[in-house]
Amino acid sequence: MTEHKLEIATRPETSSGAEILGFRPLYRQVKDQFVRRLMDGRWLPGMAIPSEGQLASEIGVSQGTVRKALDELAAENLLVRRQGRGTFVAEHDEQRILFQFFKLVPDDGVARFPDSRVLDIASEPADAAERTALNLQPDDAVLRIRRIRSLGGKPLVLETVSLPARVFPGLQDGPVPNNLYSLFATHYGITIANARERLKAVALTADQALHLGVAAGTPALEIDRIALSLDGSAVERRLSLCLTEEAHYQSDLR
Image 1 (cartoon, rainbow, N blue to C red):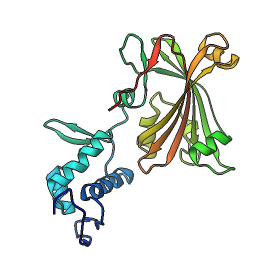
Image 2: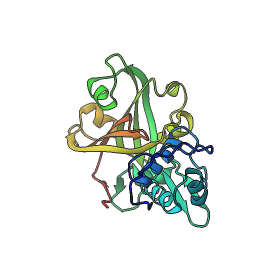
Image 3: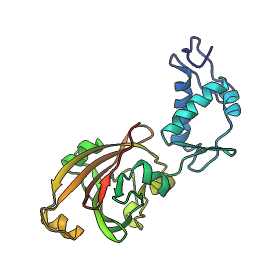
């Protein structure tokens, strides 16, 4: 059977832990197994994973099937291929976040990671928009973080991050790092796999404008982002009000 066919026969679980494969394209089933290893912490951020040959032998499929599954995970920025060194679990370092999640680029074209200053953090009842975005129950609480993000010392973004309080216990008790996604992965075992964004042109209110040092009514770009974990659960809503006089939103389409 080649990697392009469907599995016909049921395979029993092997003594080495290989899982039963069903009736879907084989490389997709293998990919699902690898995602589960990321989710349950068997493969941790920064870890080198076994070679394609080792994985193929363990699961009982061809090396080409394993390669195709790994290639998809690398294309989704969950794994990193390093020439001559192997394949590693991706980390939420600044370089990755800069190009995968932070899309504001100064008009000089040089992408830079912003600095952050936390205004406040509190555990509060979720509002209607947060409940919808994060699939919360009416009595669920959120951790709400407000912060200013700057480039070159100039305020650029007023950001409100809403997190399910039950998913991130204790986060409000410690310092809030600039790189939240790294904190999610290292302290809570939650990897942000992808996100959905909605963009809208708005005018800043007086309070919003004050935080960004501009006049009330200044035009801004509103980015409403829902970040999803490996299992597809919504774990963060991030509402960003962005000044675009000296920066632009850049998305590379493929």
